[in-house]
Image (cartoon, rainbow over all chains, first blue to last red; front, top):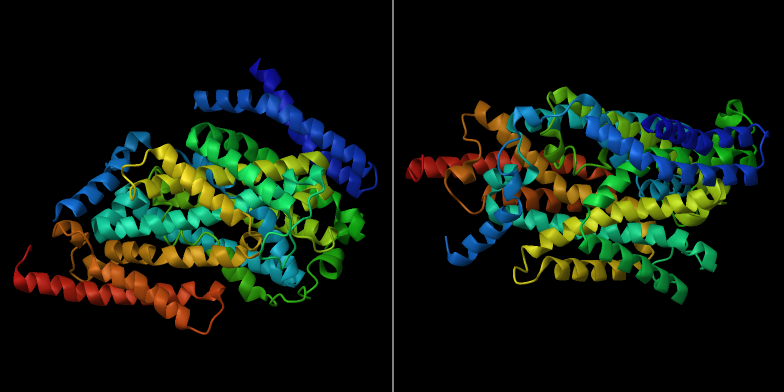
Amino acid sequence: MKGVMVVVSVAALLLTVVPAFLVLHGILSWEAHARLMFLGMLLWFGSAPFTLRKSSKER
Amino acid sequence: MNPKSNSLASRLDAMYEYDREPVDESRTQGFSSFLGIYAGEHVAGTEFVLGPLFVVHGVTAGDLFIGLIIGNILAVLSWAFLCAPIAVRCRLTLYWQLRKICGPYLTYAYSIVNALMFCFLAGAMIAVAATAVGLPFKMPMPELNDIYPGSVSWVLIVVAVGSIVTLLAILGFEKISVFSKICAPWMFLVFVAAGIAVLPSLGCHSLSDFWRVANEKIWTGVPVEGQTQFTIWHVTFFAWFANLAMHIGMSDLTILRYARKWQYGFASATGMFLGHFVAWIASGILCAAASGTVAPGPIAYLGAGVAGAVCVVIAGWTTANPTLYRAGLAFQVATPNWKRWKVTLATGAATTVAACFPALVMKLMDFVALYGLLLMPMGAVILVDYWVFPRLGMARNFTELRKGMLSVPALLSWMGSIGISFLLPLEIYFKALPAWFVAVFIYIVLSFVEQKYYREGDAVL
């Protein structure tokens, strides 16, 4: 389960930052970038509490 | 010692009772913990305001980049060479370190000044969050030169945000502190993404265009009307002293006392270069893309849509909440018959009223500089007491040694250095450096006289 959450968290961060570079190079519209960032936000707050909490418990 | 003063000291001590002993070696933490702590702490709501203010002050791109690099390196060196070595040798919080050197009265005065500064900072962050909450309500945004509230909707939204922040502060801040750590990596990437996504609107279509656009459209070297012109010196000193209270002012003794080695002070580089370099640059780009608008909500929405607006709310909220909680805690010492919730409620209400005034956000740079200047002299006192006194044959922690309630040399060093710094014909960003030397000089001279007096009188030594 933890592995899945880590993958989702990483995907969330990639969805947050990668679309902006695609906008810069004219590959993606600003509206699509904003929607992907919103999706990234939902995925991050859905997964990060479990990922980060487990990491801190392990520490 | 009269009963009243004894009671004040004991109330204050009771608040920090848990941290009275030096941290045990077994509880110290590794380097990576400090990398995370500093990265999380310095990517905050204030970054959405400070980056745009460099743009409106007409700094050039070259001055900004070089000034930020030099200033941030100086800040990291201040943490590593001034704060961390004392932190790992004494392993005490700032409160107990000051208590030994200055006595409970002065430590109490310091706590109150710190709490007042916390209130203003929390107020600024409530206002920052309000600029994002107001977006769907088409609320008129505060402008750069606004001092007073500009509309009823602004006041209503600030009061609503302030009420929620205060309510959460009454409930405690541990869970919000955990939530804030979860937000940190995402918030940093929102800054970066928002800044990059608006570059095409400024005529930049690849990273190779960036430097040209930075000079022509973003940091143009022309200040907005009514704003002072910033130079590389302003940028360097502001970046160095943005956290003056924490490094040279020694507030971070409380954090770095958990470090295994003094070299962990270099971990502050993550906070400086992610928060006070990348995030300031990103928010500056957003300000330029928004044609000079400095309200954080609209500029973040412009770069990242709903995620950007949510980021501003979270950044403002997670910064305001623990700040308000700590301010309430400090004020509680002055009102012993009040329950903590009542003190926090009163503190939150006063902070929310202050947040209604947009000047608190628009003058954030001046406020940050003042905050550091007011608290820094105590750091100079701690540094001198620890390193210089033994070399001069003087006693460390003299107030504790003589069982005193107040160190007059420390008090006069604090007041004198601030007073003299205000007489100097310098902008507020530059006053702290001469003030530090004044504080050191006054504290050494007066402590020498004080210790000589007590020795001759054979009072305690």
